[in-house]
Length: 320
Image 1 (spheres, rainbow, N blue to C red):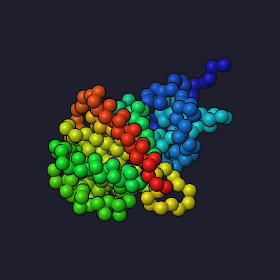
Image 2: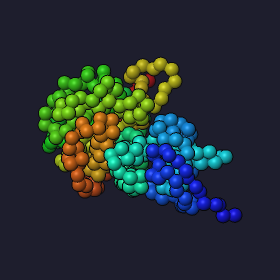
Image 3: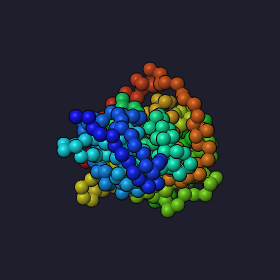
Image 4: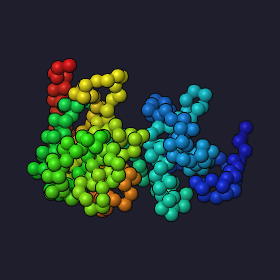
């Protein structure tokens, strides 16, 4: 039996009209196809939780799904909706565009059709856009050594890079602040993320961007060096641990790349996160990141594969 037309009557500010009739339409946009649990197993937010996180009523989220195809939930047994963290980011980006003066339809079109659609973190964005990157679980000492090596190479060889780094905690950044001041001397722009109380003043380098307590990026370790002659990106998501563990035993599911296109994706994701958490402070980052670099050479691909193997052996050889 055909379903009757849906009718939406709402004064909700997130809706584009107060009274409107339409027939139920197929989903469109980035969430066009109904996802299965196997396709996106991390989704676990109910529609009520998504509503609480974003401030958008549940009824409006259902209306958006029917009319615009987003946010598109997974369907568990019993047809209960479940959403992923990136759906939170998508809704927040739509609201940001609405606050900037766009109509609802335009806000959806720009958000769901863009390759630069909002991501909850650099790690999540790289995993989604570059599924060929092979994750490895590394302990903090290994990850720190790899990060320091990349910083040294960037400082010694990269020409006017755009740099991003996620430190999780402000105290971790303060311990490395002198090092980052030195990195900033020859960089086009430097942005650091942590649990800062407030963003640094516009024009201050490095730009300090506060990350909300419930943001996925608060669990992330990241370094992005976007430079035409020396691109590199590394990011790790901290694996939750049961009970207290030593700092040296903290583990991160990590991906890294020197593919210029993947590094540019990482830097654009970080730039958008900076704009989200410190609006108006990031200056001309988008201009610095305009254009698309060429694909990685075969030598780069081979080097990444070899280093992945070396890193795996080194980590497995560590005691403990």
